[in-house]
Image (tube, rainbow, N blue to C red; front, side):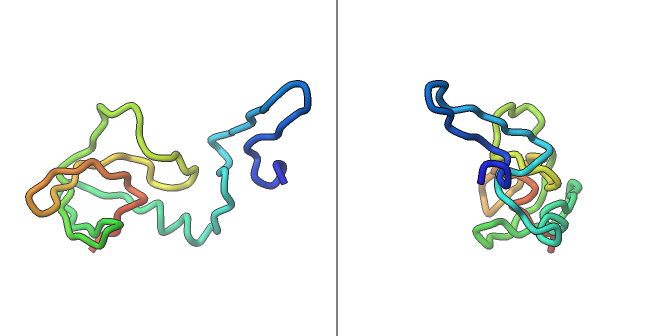
Length: 98
């Protein structure tokens, strides 16, 4: 199974061997779904969050080093989104353009 997921395997006497390759997803995602997850956004775009809240993109949050899971083929950019009265940093693949 590790060959299908391309993540890791446990080798007796050697421990856990990690083979994560960012060019291959740790979970198989259908290519049609990845297309939906690769939508780009610009400042001023009206978006819907994964919680179904409406927000507006205010900028790119490039100063954040750690973020959500990297998904090859998806929009992994972190955006500053104004939702209600709060600014949130959200990853692109969690947003939907309205």
